[in-house]
Image: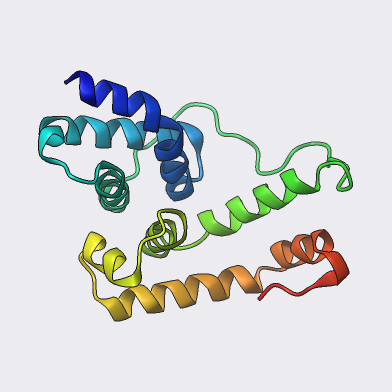
Length: 168
């Protein structure tokens, strides 16, 4: 099982980014990834493509998770001071994208993560999630339409591109 430990050490950052794309929260992403790694540990010796398999298990585990009630601190919706957009445009863009993606339904978020972050085909995404190819296409189209229509995201992307290109 040293193989597994070596793999986890090397793959942790990229798998954590995949989990973060699903949850929108680094702490939940770590919990999700640890849950998935615990599930996969027993099957490790039989895996041919561990990255693809783990991203699939991340998406399916994420979709099956029930929200746990948290009674601790809850972060504020906005910061007390607005950062300067000229020096922090990239951070603003990343946060706007995060907020827009987190607002999407869970299934659409999972499809976007597998399609565009894990770089799976539509067919592979459908197989990974156990849904139809048409469902993957419609989830992708709906999610991208919502992201394109988001006014905050549109404004930031328009401001950050040269010549004021529109979001396509």
